[in-house]
Length: 156
Image (tube, rainbow, N blue to C red):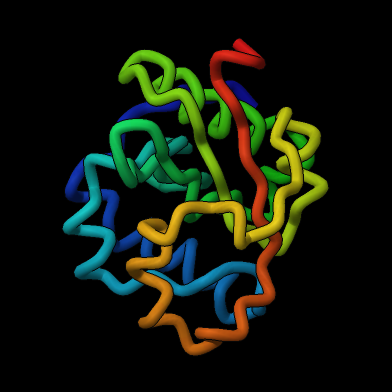
């Protein structure tokens, strides 16, 4: 598939919401509300097939030295084609451009992020400021996601 990664637009929000929550309903990622996606639309990248969102990811800035890759979702028919890796690369490139040295993720698929150059860490090593939205999670405080971190200066 030929694809172009682009910044998400407002009209992509309903499809991003549907895609992310499709995987969330299967326990593969955390659900996102429509309002949360609208409020953070500038964080998102999408890949479109015509007008259909077939993949998305967000780079959310947590602090001056830390950002999070989140809401990475790729439709089943577009998986195993390098789409997810390209989206993560877009996030890491944006973090580099912004001067953010460290990117982390919380995920149920740590092996994928290890392939992208992330390293497993203990969640307790992450700064407390990253837990701001966790209190809304139904699994809080018993988070079962794996934490991984990517150091831009070391890897780029």
